[in-house]
Amino acid sequence: MSEIQVLPVLNHRDRETFLTFPWKIYANDPLWVPPLLPDLRKRTDPKRGVFFKRGTARYFVAWHNHEPVGTICVAEDRKSNEETGRKEAIFGFFNFVEDYTVMEALLERAIHWASARGLTSLVGPFNLDYEDGYGILVEGRDRPPALMCGHTPPYYLEFVERYGFIPARGDNLAFALDITKDKPVFQELAQMAEHVRQRRKDILIRPADLSHWKDELERVYILLNRSLAHLPDHRPWQREVVFENLAPFRKIADPELVLFAEVDGKTVGWFPGLPNLNEIFIHVNGLRKPCDYLKLWQHQRQPIHCLTIKSILILPEYWGSGVVILLFDEMLRRARERNYKWLDFSLTSADNPRTPVLAKRFGATLYKRYRVYRLEI
Image (cartoon, rainbow, N blue to C red; front, side, top):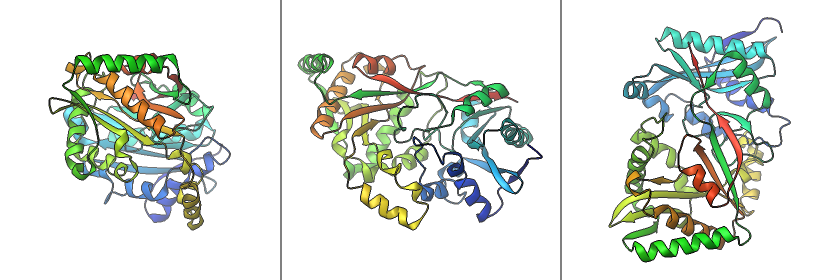
């Protein structure tokens, strides 16, 4: 390929090119779930995006013969770097045609930006959000991703590793559990849960109370930082990030499927189930055009088959208490009552000593694997 220019996004037209470029990459990929453009515009806007309360970012587009051929965002999360003592740049919105030289040009531009700011490593991909659509798909191309999970072409993995990136941490895993039929493991789970109830009458499993939304978010914020602190690459969560990331779920969540565990009134666990809206979003083209809103209205009337569970948080001192058994049993019962067909557990780290084991113990199978990378610069 002849000369490639990687230019910064400077105006509204550039930003629309940047945001809509993935439609070129995934035009013929039936597994891709287009992101919602209204959400992307807000998230990437320095005046509105929650990331910009704690960091700065720059967007670039790669051009060849006046046509866009790739995009990248490189950013500095100042607050995270201050708290962890790191000098990391994060990269994301990382999309490019199947040409290694295009990816090279994008990464060289990102490295130049990071080095000029005194940063010493490049970590990602993260789209300005550590929890939404991150990583490169390593395996699992038999079905679309669940809500908040990403999708990438096969050549991304090969190109990134060829460049010299290494895994930044353990892979991120998604598990699937078919709940349409009775299974011995479900009966065993129910028996175990009943045993725990008889033994630990101080444990209460309750649904979310949306009338006290901020109080519930504060409980989640505390659980996130205390329950995940043991993970090797744990980054302390910022309160405003938790509140901002969970805000959209207030509109879509069934509070009866967002479960909290309490012991003598103290919140010790959280197990949220959400309808997998990607079953709808895959049909609405990211709401790029006015007619896509009609498609959204039409598909909203269809049943959703998957309940996606994005996290299971248990305070470490309650890991062996039976809390997790009660949460799993209650969620399974409620999901089946509401005619969900399968549960998605995503994403959990392979470094987590408990969650992958629990998922397999209750009959779930691994169906997707994602990887986040690091490059020392």
